[in-house]
Length: 208
Length: 270
Ligand code: SF4
Ligand code: SF4
Image 1 (spheres, rainbow over the protein chains, first blue to last red):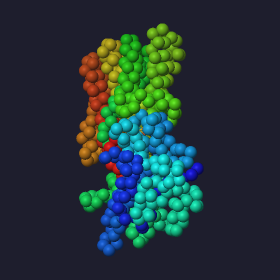
Image 2: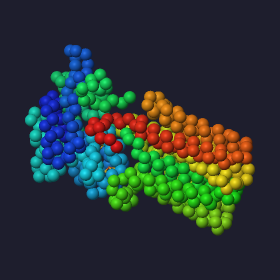
Image 3: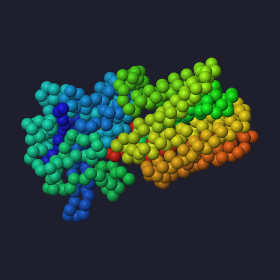
């Protein structure tokens, strides 16, 4: 099965929030709701060995997607192209998927009273266009495609880097497909950061 | 996460109802209770059904609920299925009891009621075990659901035995069941409290006073007194029911309050 996803090259990302805005515009995501969000991770470490980077987040297209396995109606499902999607017509609003997603990247559509999330812009990719966030990325940091196809944009970009420079969000058995490229040029990849010391910096939430 | 009252009430009421039916079913082996069996089974069915309805109020599109039946999966489908089976077992027991069915049949259904109560109350908690929720992903959580429901169900049975003025032997045995339920609640909720790290901080009062003292120590004391002294069982049973229900609800509230998501990147509240 194809593993379509977004790959982000953090060496290139400037943290401009363009992807976040493009996603909202393209998908008509209401104010206060989001399918995509750029985090600022850090700063962490001791001067001069400090790390601070932008981290664009969205549905990570997990291979063992917990949101799909817990959904009681099949509203959260994987389509023929292997993409995890929500059939909003079937959603009963139990929010089980929102509890089960390890990253909290699902959104609650207040108007339609159902769960939703990044669709990888299937309405565009089905017409051989790029997802809005990928197309709009001014730094050329975002890529879309199938990890299993060596000729896809994502595979070609990943092939330029060694394994140690390729990261995923913390995997608790869900096997996220999205890859983040980050070399030592930017700093050290952080799995988790306690935000307490940096009250003005958005960081990963911390597990106590 | 915010406390999901619909779900708190669902598992607290339905779980207690299932164990109430189980206690009535268990009496088929002892034959001690004469008047409390029928009202207990009816009350149990009502509690299970009311709990089920409470859970549906949590949904934003209850009109699409039938889609659940078309999609068998662990979690919500399993809970709904077990709830349905439990009601069928209870109803069958009730009808056959009223028709004076053979002892063997009633004992068989009695065992089925006990097994269903255990499986159903455990399953309600196991639905919350997920790797995304750090304070929920322990087997102590569903065991706590089971233990606290057992305490509430046995206390209700004791209350009905007292209300219907059953004989001393029945009251004493019902008090023993309360004692067993209270010990189960105490052990499982203490295990959950320590494993999930909810014994201190903001949740300390709810845990120690609500879950441990009200839900465990109070019914335990009632059970111990009630076993020895069967006069004045009614006030004792009322206290046991109040304590066990407060404990059962507090345990479920605590689960929501103390939840820790692996990551909550969008910060969307549930
Ligand atoms: S990131 Fe969350 S919403 Fe996306 S597939 Fe994984 S579990 Fe589902
Ligand atoms: S909120 Fe909707 S999509 Fe999510 S698990 Fe429930 S029915 Fe499925």
